[in-house]
Image (cartoon, rainbow, N blue to C red):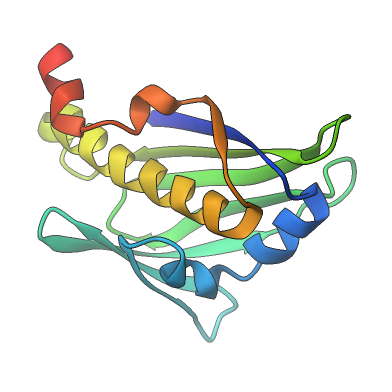
Length: 160
């Protein structure tokens, strides 16, 4: 399974960030490659992501675990184009104001012999979309981890 992490500091508080992130159906208005997110009858969300001239589609269940992590949303694919897809959004208030937002995702694609190329490319789209969402809901984002994953995925492939 491929794992990617993107972290950013933003001017918004953790509570404000979470208030926006729980409304995932709004994500298409924040990120150009998220074509749609719609609620399903079983309490999940149907996602459609632009990918390589087509789409990647999946249904995921999302929830807030609460407890010691009040500003966390976990999600997991229940059916769709990935073999596995699981991750979380976490926001933590910073002492000087603002917050740190982390997007963590683990995934594997359904074509093992092409995993290196496909995983890199889909990871690029997922992280760029997360960066656009963070910037839209929390203000200007300063990337503190994962910035190297936001570049051109073909550049990453040539370096591998």
